[in-house]
Image (cartoon, rainbow, N blue to C red; front, side, top):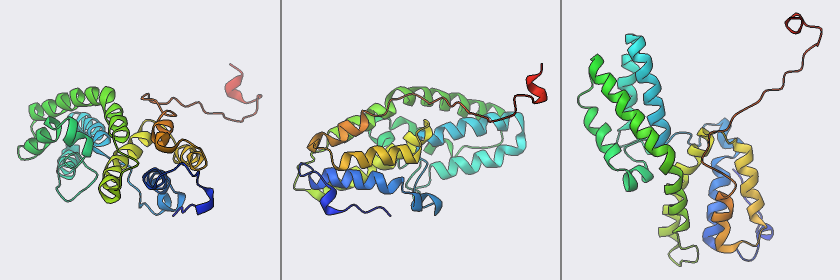
Length: 224
């Protein structure tokens, strides 16, 4: 687990801006990643998974059990990082958790029902593609980083970061890049603007990848 040195911090940081940076760093810490102690899912990513599994179920009915299990997992009251308990969904899009909570009691191996789940999930996903990250940014910017109510505000930070990090990983940012950006904030004199400056490094677009393959130019596939 990453722990900073006291002498590393800019004097303009508050206890809560420090807490934000430390929480982000720990969520993408290498030791946490390899031990699977960090969260990579939230309500948004689970909706995309429901879409994928519902499409597969319509092609291969044997996948129905996976869809049923996923819907139950997504609405389990004891699972923190799911659709039912997603802080952003509950606050800004509470019709979405309500839909899945209702449909889990009706789920059966019925083609029309599965098509309805797929259609509704695609509508939800399209909506969240535009709004989810904006909701996260608004929530983080609304926190009073100079507040004396440390535990109240830090609890909110915990909830929001549990949505933020899985989202950034999902759209293509690596744990290393997130960690490096957070670490650069430690010595910066941004003070209560730290969160806004951190978020300014990310946009709301899926990242494309290019792969560099080193090969022999005389290889057969380059001769055509």
